Length: 87
Image 1 (tube, rainbow, N blue to C red):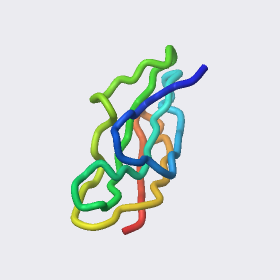
Image 2 (cartoon, rainbow, N blue to C red):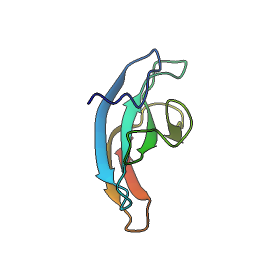
Image 3 (cartoon, rainbow, N blue to C red):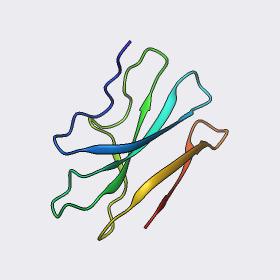
């Protein structure tokens, strides 16, 4: 099964995934959709049926000025996740 969690026009890179503890997953990635060519961090929750649960093309985690890159993710044990990245 192929799953598309983001179809924004600009590139997405460095996806990371972890369980949400509820038979789904949370995915985070670097995304270049913002004007200016900088990478920002986005995330999306996917349930056990493969349906995305958050805003179309994911939610912004960090879109501060300049680059945010190389996200890492782990479950928080309560249905969410902890996401870190480099600046």
